[in-house]
Image 1 (cartoon, chains in turn blue, yellow):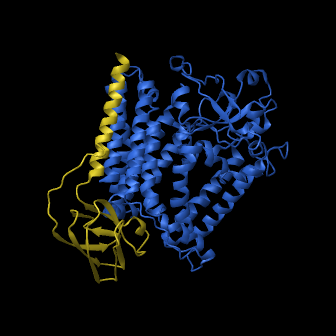
Image 2 (cartoon, chains in turn orange, red):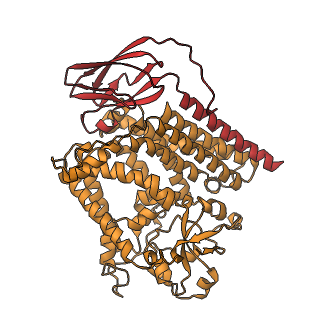
Image 3 (tube, helix red, strand yellow):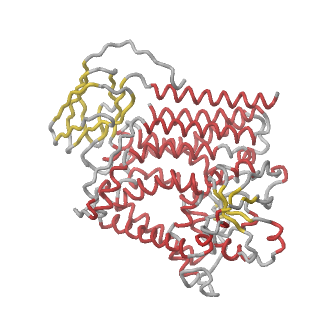
Length: 469
Length: 131
């Protein structure tokens, strides 16, 4: 097996004060250079096959949502999207593979096929579509980066009780997302929907630096001497791999690895969260906002869906009524103001602010391991209790009385009542310790490090109380 | 913190709860018992048919609309257990849950204590690095 060391990456566009050397470059195992595994990376067929399967599953999900049973727990769309896929995303895809879900996500496929006039990239030298650059602002509203993703995720919470339980709405939402991604691909270049609108893309990109895999160039000097930048031209995400400092933007489609004429790109296995140690890139304002919204949302969703407060769920479900309006106001105040406000207070208590937004961004990276751990802990409760619904809906995806493969009558409900809380406690503690480590590394003063760790402790205790009380 | 014993000085007793199920909500939604207590739960379905099963306990009640069903069992396992509706009763059915606490919630106390210890460890690292 070949172990290679990744060379110094390009410095992104950052303010000089925020630049710094990578602290330690750990060794990597290049999976894409293993003879047995190499065809998986160099051929487009394996990834296409995986995407074809997810596209078929996506189509089935839309059909089941629109035409299947209206009882959510008997409908493939509800159980597979909000239980099976949502759980896999947070427990497997992101922690182990970063943005690996984005690599197999079917949503951008129809638009890309039309845009490149073929199933595989490079099928035709002519592109279909206007190919406009995504605008940075819409009037005074910033819309590039993760701003819309953060706002979108916050808005999802307003309708989550309905969306998570109504097959019809889930079907229409998925169909709408597919149509939106397709329409945007006709107007804008690269994956505009994925990069700027998809809430899941924002979610996965935010926590991808924690993953133990990466796609990186082996030798930046080779890239610097290569004037054609073939990798950038072929990247559907608009990422220049040689300038990549962390996993947040790369969708792991491996196109750069395939087209590099110098064979200078590797898919590496590494330690968890190496980006937090080796990269000095600070979060942008939109990323900080998204990280805070994600923390607010996971606390809110835990209270809403896992707590014993049925009245709260009923209010969240009654969209358009006064109880729903009250729920919405409290939710937005909590997730959009209180949780971010507490972070701003912690940063302020840690020392003077050198520009409000800039200081918040500078110390925001501890929010990432903390956020990932809280989402994993939430998912353990959310998923394990409802895993018994998964097999029956495979046997009867439309909830009309089928019994395919004999699965509709299978009752698989493992007793995890004692194991799940222990796992949640362990995950939350790991997140707290990990967040503290990043805080100590990034803080400019001991007081700031203590304040950031205090914030992480407050969030962790909040999750412990919601999940275990 | 993880393994420290937490003595309980209560004697086993009998407890009865009447739980109403309506609008995908249990009332009351939190039930308490001590280990060894004999617990009787009477479930009344106020609107549509509802069920009540407790994770970790062989309890599964079914009540037809306007009817009641009851069960008596010994709370032999300590801890915090979810109880949930076991009959599809509406769109919010998967989230129709409550909590059955047997004895003090040691997991909550231990997890909170460990989190505080982890934060203190982080503070110690800050000062150790500074020194």
